[in-house]
Length: 116
Image (cartoon, rainbow, N blue to C red; front, side, top):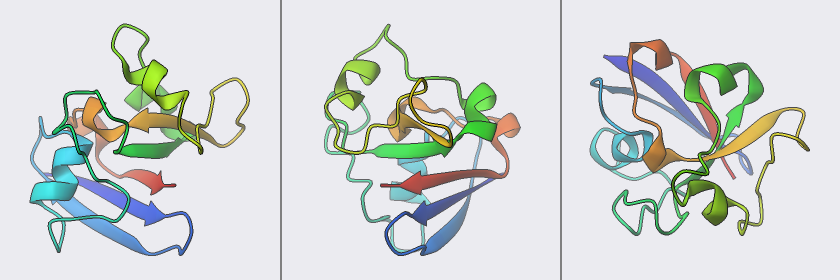
């Protein structure tokens, strides 16, 4: 099992979830969180990378492991329209990702993400 922690940026509330490998970060919130929902992770498109309602901020120390938003899918284009977009070149602390595009592997164990 992989342990992931979600922190609400506005309140500091956190929830740590344990999920099996090959689950996306967005799916983790829907299927494994305490209330089957984490505020701010709507996932309106069901994980098809077409809405940006699962936007999260990933601390820079996790950047190498999670990777950057891809321009090979719609991810980067969608994120650029988000109010709280954390661009790798402009942000010292966080990068923006769509949680539906991060498939969790053992290397992600202990991952912490912030919900803007």
